[in-house]
Each structure stands twice: as C-alpha cells, then as structure tokens.
Length: 239
Image (tube, rainbow, N blue to C red):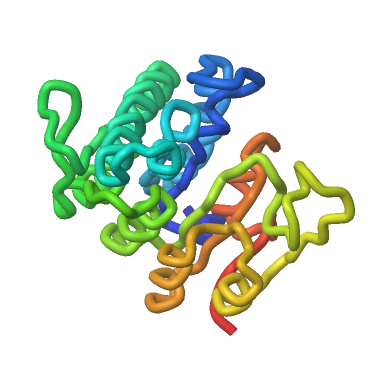
C-alpha cells in the first residue's frame, strides 16, 4: 500500500477501445486485456470505480445528428453502456476480480441500481464497481458521468484510458506532428478546445480540483504506473 499514490480511482474507458481492430462491437481479446490491467491495480490495494462509454455500439450525439430525438438517442446510448459494463464485469470476474455493475437506469434483473453509499461500501470491500447508464439523464456524455461518479465516490483521481499517450494539440491518430502536453491546466484545456473530455466534465473537475490523468491503455502496466504515482501520459490539474 505504501507505493500507491491514489487509494481510490475512477477509471474512464472509451467504448471504441473495446472494439479492438473491428469496426463495431466488443472484442473478447480486448476485454481480457483490460480486465488483466485493472486486476493489477486492484491487487495493489487501490479501490477502482469504472465508467465505460458506448461508442462501439451507439453514440447518442451521432443518432441525434441523423434526425433522431436527442433524448431518445441518449437513452439508447446509456443502455449501450450497460451492455459494455456487463461484458467487462464478466471478463473481470473470470480474471478473479470481484465486480459489481451499478446502473443509473434501474434494471434489477441484470445489475444493481446506483446508490452512492452502497457503491462506496463495495469499494471499501475491495470490489471493483462499474457505473453504467451514464448519469441517467440525456444531454450528458459518459465523460461527464465519469467526473460526476468520481466526485461522488471521492476518488483521488480520474484516469481516462484511451488509445493515445496523453493529451495532444491535435489528434495524433489523424494528423502528423502532433505535440504532446505532459501537464496542463483545466483552463488551458477549455481555452484550446482540446479533446480531453467535454467542457462540462472539465469544468466539473476544475470546480472541484479533481486531477485527470490521460494515458494510453494499450501499453501494459500504464494504469498501474499511474496509480503508483509515476509520470504517465498527461496530467490535467489546476494552475
């Protein structure tokens, strides 16, 4: 426990990352890999909360842009996060990590309803908790949901695990010459319009001085190293 910088973390995983090399759906290989990376963190003694996006199945904003009612599209996206959460729970428990899925949409036949005090109790008992269905409200992304849940469970840090090694001035997967930031402030993220998280999520983190670490989850041990306090990816915090 002495080598852990963060005792409780909120891990944000993108839905797209679960696709692997496919263009849609869930890769069992990726699930198993992510489950093993999370287990390394849990084995350190860190309490882990998780929020997973749904871009691999359905994105509410995309549906709304094609003429669908935004509230309906967002509800579909939140339901898609439940599918991802159940898949991740299965992979984690097969890997020996006791896990609970708690949904902002009540669906007791497949998972627990989200209750803050119960979630904290699960964490204290060293159970990983996956928070599904976003905030339960339309017009909010899973990035914002991750910050909200991170604040509610009093996480020490929010770790956004992506497919790039931190925050860049442009998308390194699409444009050459992208420059990486080792650290930057919330204000700079908002001013530059950097795609770390949406503005609502960043503003919430700023208002509550909650640090955000953005890292590449495809590099083995990156999440474990970040939890241990090593400099990994990019750190977003106050001035």
